[in-house]
Image 1 (cartoon, rainbow, N blue to C red):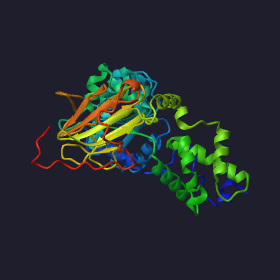
Image 2 (image 1 turned 45 degrees about the vertical axis):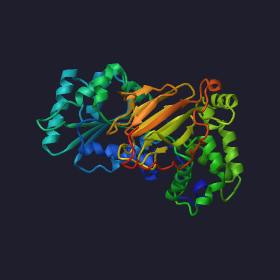
Image 3 (image 1 turned 135 degrees about the vertical axis):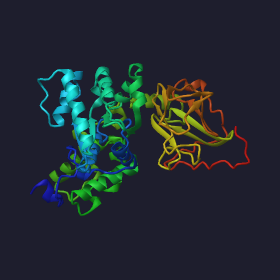
Image 4 (image 1 turned 60 degrees about the vertical axis):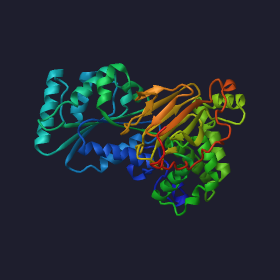
Length: 424
């Protein structure tokens, strides 16, 4: 009897090959797809999608491409360690040309004529560059120049750049200032949280034809999450190996013993140690009892009055008026996804997510910068006070000892201030 017959499955639920049929639409994956879809009707800027290895970028791209209709012509370039000329050749090849005996000026003319022809036929052209973190600065600048091709009415080439987090850093290079200004939307795909991890596993089992989600029981979730960190590719690897362990022992479903056997066969440590963070977190916890792995504190004030105090471990914290954010501020001054904080034990970076009203520290509006402990971030009448509790923990104290940490899985709602209160 085969693996699939034993578990009464139609297909393998946790294979690593990207398959749009299995895509799980978490809130962040849905948002990233919406950003990509916006390129179809917004042709005046880049869309940049980044994510950690195994976060589902490629599957997301494939799902997006499957849903494009005949009015859209697209090319996907995924081999990105290229010269500028080789990149043009790769793009034109994907559009159906044979450009390998052409000089660069001829390649540019060929692409320009193709774009104008498609525009005349009411076609929209999308160029998607996967693994874009490998592009050289020179090639990225070439892509910016391509985005300038236009008719008398509008740009004719829509561009999506997808890649690992290094792409964000590369785009922030002073040498690419003009390209960064052309980026209309950015989104980073993080790991799934524990609830989405469970939903992800259940979804893939259903698509594969499992009669019951208990094929991988809910009581194994904590261990699965601890060893995968919510990274989809790691979830697939661990769950598939656990199913094989259960199959080898002729069990009808996975047990905790099978999960731990799979962890042993894969020779995995807990997920944080795979990223080099676990040991640092332990050192922080030992140095400052009570804070465990938390490295930053955010005090939220409205009109000068403290509304909440949160502490967070290393990672990404998004602030906005949408309830899916880690810090939820219900206010007309705050965009749905207004800004983000990306912190590790060594530093914390603040970045404006193309908000309507901007992000200010003091009188200065900031797009991206490293924070210092004590910085006050202004979002309209709201202030976020950042305190570094990861470094120099012995000489940092909580400036508001009367408040307890309020961070949990559901962030508190910060109500908009009554009109009678003065702005702080």
